Image (tube, rainbow, N blue to C red; front, side):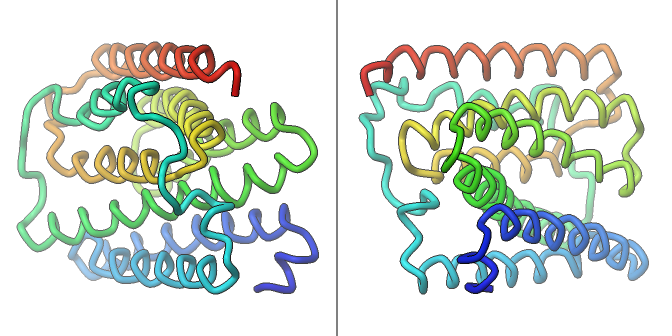
Length: 239
């Protein structure tokens, strides 16, 4: 793994994206075949995240990939209050227990580690690899790749309109997270928000969520993400 990394960081990032997407899809499919949601996905995501974290720690790359303390004043970032809005979006239309207790626990565990994996892969590996030559290009590619990565949800049974809407706001959120990491040098605000946002989706009352409501949420998330990004860029302009 280290030889691939030292030879070409971009290829290293793309390999990780491939491993993650394939493993996650296969594990979800196997879990559905067994009949218990996330029964395979949760331990595999946990193991993959542990391997990734240990490799980063062993090679002294924690600071490079943002697994360190936040470098800027939280006050300058409005104490991350806008991130709370983003994280709570799945509860806006009500609270519902969609899975059994065991499946709910497994779902939350898998989503917590998915938040870690996706942030390190897209905001860490991919962004940093491209950032070496062009920062603006790195921000755009990292955000768009992260958003379009959600197209894999079609393989897991999501309908096309909902998936397309999700891709739209995922690009906007990805843009915001990239800027937070780029300016603050830490991925933890992004990891925590991403993990909570994903985990709370298990309690979403999807029966009452229509396409117009999906669109309304998408517009709100895009506005908050882009507005908060512009605010951060303005407040950190001198940096």
